[in-house]
Length: 327
Image 1 (cartoon, rainbow, N blue to C red):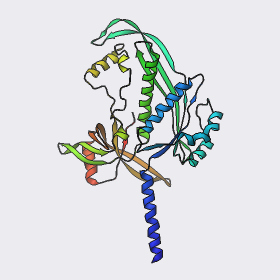
Image 2 (image 1 turned 180 degrees about the horizontal axis):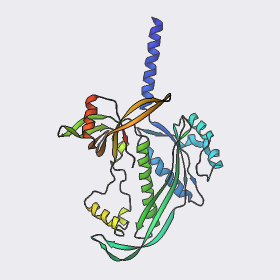
Image 3 (image 1 turned 45 degrees about the vertical axis):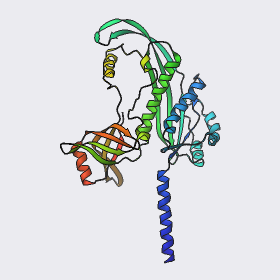
Image 4 (image 1 turned 180 degrees about the vertical axis):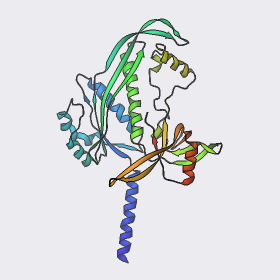
């Protein structure tokens, strides 16, 4: 009997420890970014801080390891400086030693600022040209890599280039700030898509014709940020939006407040099969949700597709999952 109680006690401790581990934030080690070619070291530092901010603003989901713990990586970073990817197997091992679950590295290229001459288009009369103007475009390029320490596998490897287009004046500070903000938006979108925690439907808050029209789901600001995948950036009002037909259209949309990039979610189920002795998972899309309002730790979504299918899914109590839709 004593042995039985001991076994039960050990199982209980294991379950509690596992539950606690699941509630803990994901630990992230961001190594010093390197500069490609003649890139400004200050720009490299600012780009790194921009990427770090995408994780630091979600303290319940991510824990950034203290920089003092990253000294062990210095030699490996110096040895691979200037390469497309700053990565070595030693980094993975050292990541395990300091408790990192993911290691982030990056290479920043020099910013490109170009001058272009373009025709002006009257936004109220797209067929009418009002002359030509000089505009200034600034591009920041980042080679970003995220490695998963547990497996040693590359979790993300992406070349990101963001451009502040069509600035009306040659204000380098403003152009760089705008491009950095756009870079942050891009990385934020990828963080949202790749590190999405489990999301569940809490309740139907509005119906239309007997089918769900609006839902309340778990996950609030720390998952969906402000509900827009591309919020406006400082200096957007400086950008010339009257230069092309597409931009002229965007001006009119902006007047009506419909120029935000929306965040969509996919509701899906997973069927498991065995093919040639190997497990095989097949996802089936049930419907689509649109983020409408962030309410603290929960979010109100509009059912944009699959109302009937989502109702059947909830009625059947079948297992499902929700993920951020790729843009």
